Length: 334
Ligand SMILES: *[C@@H]1O[C@H](CO)[C@@H](O)[C@H](O)[C@H]1NC(C)=O
Ligand SMILES: *[C@@H]1O[C@H](CO)[C@@H](O)[C@H](O)[C@H]1NC(C)=O
Ligand SMILES: [Ca+2]
Image (cartoon, rainbow, N blue to C red; front, side, top):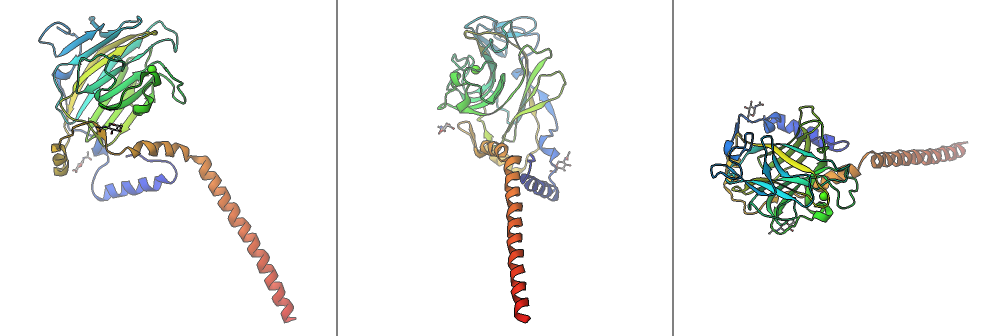
């Protein structure tokens, strides 16, 4: 539930009232009865057999390599690509993925790149320009972009964004994926003094991305998208690429938790409907946010000011007419 400033507050209050009246606790939405770590979808120390054993749940690709402390997707060298991909398709409906990663290098600020991405996609082990994955991927990409290839505009980098691929849209590396990004946030993920984490939670068709990068051990919201439909049976992965600029991109762990969510019969029926391609039901939720920022205090203030002035002018004119009318009446009587 989100509360907005100004006029939206009323709507929000109303929504809360409705929720209370119908007995739906707001806290319920984000509360899960249990979380189970799923080992077959998780990657953590010691990375036994990773990259060579057939018993491992993960595959390495490109320049990625395993050390005792991390899986290094790329070293701090130019033109490298590396990835790690889960071997088992994910069929869970409600899950949470916690990624412990580290991006670091000797490059000065803004002379490092290119970043890394976390994936849940139909295809695995693909090469390409989207942080070491194919540009026309099908599925979900959480992109951690550390270098602004184009004019960053109002965004400060590193910038984390969410893209949903349906096989038609391409990730545009030269424009930092701006045309296809659904939402995102800035986060100081590079050369951090602290451990850096990304949390991706998908439940009830809601996607929430949160970050913990400043050593405060708390999740900061980054992205919230509702009505996001993802087919099941996709593969988890993480990839990275360097170009002229480079960085070490390390994955320390990727832990997938199954979320147990109590569902209504309607929700269960909805789950039976198969989703063929990833999509977002309500694209307007992204436009609303932009309007929210544009329709800020200034506009409201100006509107109010003119209303007050208008009422004042009307009152003055009214008083003048009233004055004249009473004067005329007086003259008629005397
Ligand atoms: C969650 O909602 C159910 C009813 O749907 C209610 O019985 C339960 O007490 C709620 N739990 C919390 C923690 O509010
Ligand atoms: C894929 O997404 C794009 C952009 O949202 C949309 O224009 C296109 O119709 C979609 N393609 C399919 C096959 O759904
Ligand atoms: Ca970039």
